[in-house]
Structures are given as C-alpha cells and as structure tokens.
Length: 78
Image 1 (cartoon, rainbow, N blue to C red):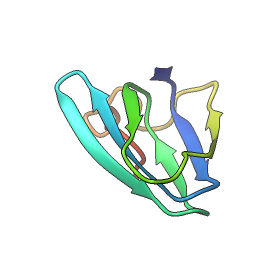
Image 2 (cartoon, one colour):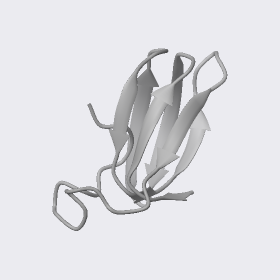
Image 3 (cartoon, helix red, strand yellow):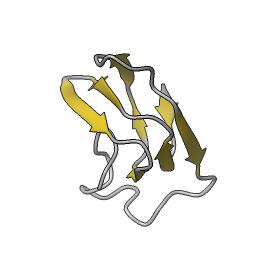
Image 4 (tube, one colour):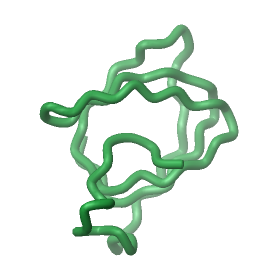
C-alpha cells in the first residue's frame, strides 16, 4: 500500500510485520496509541493473535519531514 504522511490511531492492540523493499520491521501497537506515519509504500502481515483495527488519517499536504533523510521511515513513529 502506498500512503502519504499520516496519523494512525490504534483501536485495538495488534502486532504486524511491515515490509518495504529490503526493509522489514515488526510493529506492536497498544489500543489507544496515536502515531505519526511518514509517507511510505509497504505491505503488512498480521503476526499477532488479534485483528488489526486502526483509524488512519492521510494528510493532503506532506508533513515537515517529507523529502529529508528522517522522512522515509517504515511503520509508526513515536
């Protein structure tokens, strides 16, 4: 999936494996967590015991880190 800069709210606790090119990252989120997601193209796989339920708000305009070395990170950022 290709996402622009986004904000994610976890409605349930979950664990997922995210893959983007050669980069792989295991992500675990607790229900109620809100996280910043820089623009990214990835695929995900549920690796936990619970379904993944989130609200994802995709921004129309890039965030302040777009196009910088700190911008293209995979997965939710604290």
